[in-house]
Image (cartoon, rainbow, N blue to C red; front, side, top):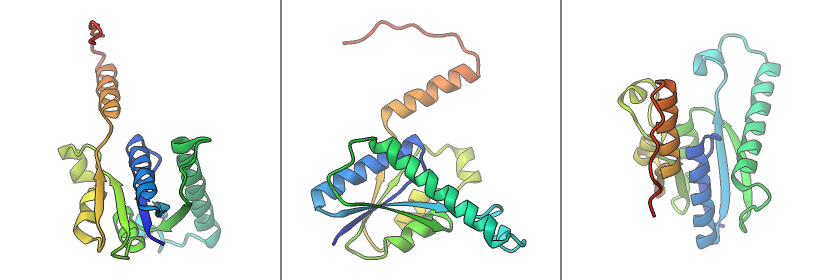
Amino acid sequence: MARVVVGVTGTPGSLTALHRAAAEARVRRAELLAVLAWQSPGGALGSRNGWGPDVLTEYRSAAADRLREALDAAFGVEWPCVPVEGLTVRGTPGAALVDVARDPEDLLVVGAGSRAALRRLVRPSVARYCLAHAPCPVLAVPPSPLQAALAAERRRNRLRMPLVLREPTG
């Protein structure tokens, strides 16, 4: 069966990507595979510092809970009319998604959030990594306009800027 693989983190951008992936799965009559990548504290180095299997089991369980919460937040009681499977993978997000979507018939859907210069330096783009390395088609979903408006208002609040009242358009 064809698959639509989507990266999920629980952020508004990933939920937008999840909805788009569900629509693509419906059109393609494919299975929807929601993937959440997780890492142990400290990344690859953290796995060498003596964390016991109990700690790693807790992190794996927390990742599974986060995936369930993201799916519930995205779909609530109205789940898409396609088979949905969740998968948690230990690793960096880009590499984990590319590894899961290894069949050329798969479609990989990722969120392409806003990429401010400082954020690019601190955290590499998962979408860019997937576009460069995936053996299957990749669909990068831009953030919703509502998300951009919310981010702008949060910046205004953080900077304590005065409220701007506008006449409704329409």
